[in-house]
Length: 94
Image (tube, rainbow, N blue to C red; front, side, top):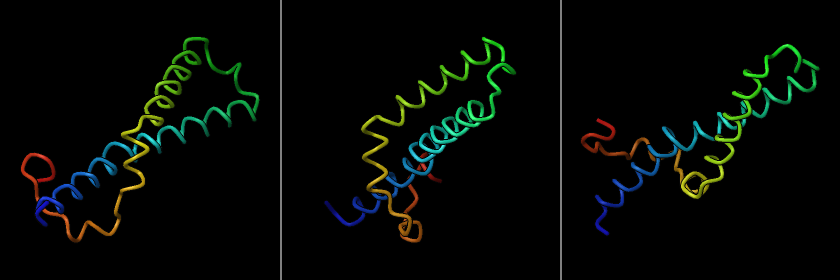
């Protein structure tokens, strides 16, 4: 693979992680922390059944997304130092 293609791939990998995978993982962790706070503070009764069902549905969906191979594999290949070497890819990061 030519060097330019390798840089493009690294740029896309990093964009995928920073714009998609990272936020999914952060949201998944935030939802779990919020659920834990609700339980630890005995606040379940402060939320309607509809609110609890909605929160549970979001948490279940985020858990599923966070476990996808495209999320977990990208986390290991993210290069935080690549930003200085990133190149512009029209329609992606321009």
